[in-house]
Image 1 (tube, one colour):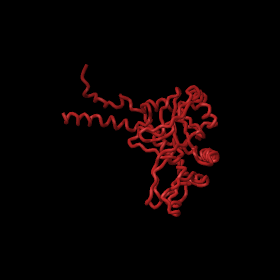
Image 2 (tube, helix red, strand yellow):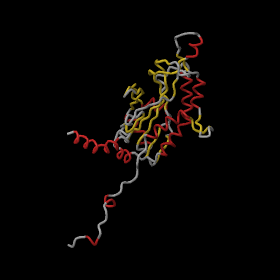
Image 3 (cartoon, one colour):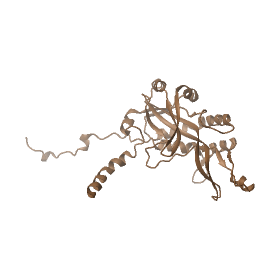
Image 4 (cartoon, one colour):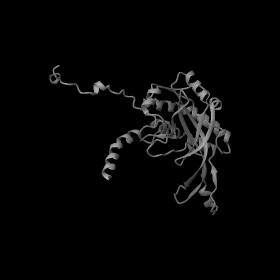
Length: 284
């Protein structure tokens, strides 16, 4: 009996392995056939989400400016997956679209990953897709969320577990019927992980130590510090600055890695079948 179970497991292993790479809510072949022209909405900043920074309005304005500067990199990365025939950034006001087409937001805790999920007015999304002659629409949202986390001091000697306020980035691809074909964070990966765009708070261990206090205060980062973090550029192997900003590109690459599709045309059945030697063909 054990031998039978083992053989059955080995027989099914290739099937499960193949499915593990499908990061879409539909079969990958169906997605590839259905979505050839993808439109991307300029990055939306959800100003009504859980953003608790004391300079909230200034922070939202900063995020909007930074997103306009770097969102073209997302378009480029998705184009480079070669999963779509055409990828284009729409010429539309993202905040107006968000206000008009948002149905509701929902704070989710799925598989210990906490994020904001968005639901859209189907008719409006369908109209936008048809108006721009698209097969599907990608919507990327930056929002705020407060979640528990353990943060460690620079010397690794102290830590504090508490609720901290973060900025996160989420994304969805919707089809011509308003169905969600793909989403980020993605729960179809082998190992689930989801990093925030940036944390807005930090525990001030140095202040507590200087005041001989056992109570560590949690503080918000200065707006200028957040700006510098959002503008921090990657370094190449020679430690020279590149043109790519670190935080945005980390998010964009995580998304694009989950959007790779094999669009190689399948070999026809006739081509796969070995040709029969005419000399061996039976006589009629």
